[in-house]
Length: 285
Image 1 (tube, rainbow, N blue to C red):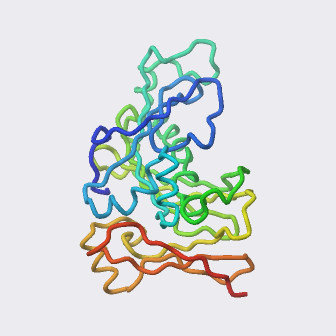
Image 2 (image 1 turned 90 degrees about the vertical axis):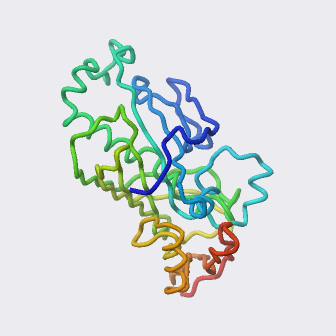
């Protein structure tokens, strides 16, 4: 489990969703209060890494709702396709609405059926906002304002449960990474942990994008190395050692028929702890 602070460690602006309406994509982020099926209150909160160097690396990508001046200041940076967030669901009896086809009896029934119903809700959450939270290089940084709203669809999604003994009324940690985005298809890999550190589930998901973009937008990414070791975040000392050995933390260009890919150079963890700046390069056919 990543070494993170509790969900209450820092206070960020929270988007409170109005029941009965679909959320605006611009409001979907790490810190939200919504209701599943307009019934059960769901909280999502930013997870803060205890390692300050690593936290600085992902800060630009996980904090939503920044001011326009912040966006302009950081739009040239390379945010990693990585996300850490806390979730919990309030199954209190007062949240049960009568005459609602999605209502699940009452909270006592729900807790008695934890081994059946809580995994179902965990599977639902594992697909919740996933693409928008790990596709930052696609929309942010160099590509800021170069895309028009379109469609994002999950085309396959798998969950492997390692434990069924958990309660979503407690906080669970989602640790997600997107190692590749190519030809408008995004791969997401993730792990889910209990507050006590138990590995509850592993997820894999593929999404397809149908979005208009400008001719100078970068559309293909392959993430390799850097602060993520074996597809998972490591501590900063391990990241420094990894870069010294491998000599890279980059999005590598991949030959295909797209107009552009992205390639970046490694950053020096021992000096500047700001995200790497990347330059677009033309792909080779």
